[in-house]
Image (cartoon, rainbow, N blue to C red; front, side, top):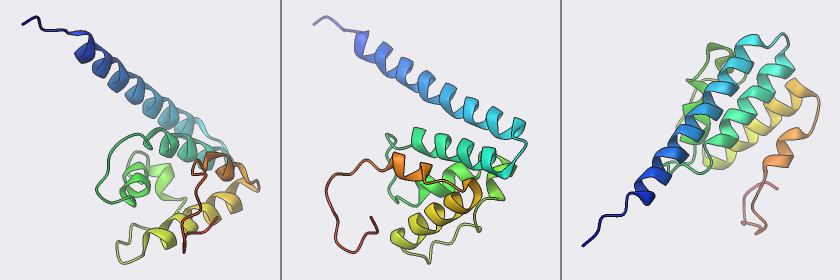
Length: 119
């Protein structure tokens, strides 16, 4: 049996690409001169975590908050008593308020309406 390292190399490359995107978003946040720039950096970092598996979808938000002190100023502290819907709605509202734009909507990827989930 021949061992094919191409899958392993591909996985490593994807991991490095993910790490690069996260570090880039954090660097942008540190250089941010406005709350809007910080919010957009958070959005980029959060978008980069979509492909990662998380047992709890709220961790896609709360995990990114821990990447930069500037991100912690964007949203309330993590609260696992809130539902997924409440957390994602809070994020959308906070980012819209900070950026004064609807850029967060560009990151919605689901084309299937899920009942009880905000659009």
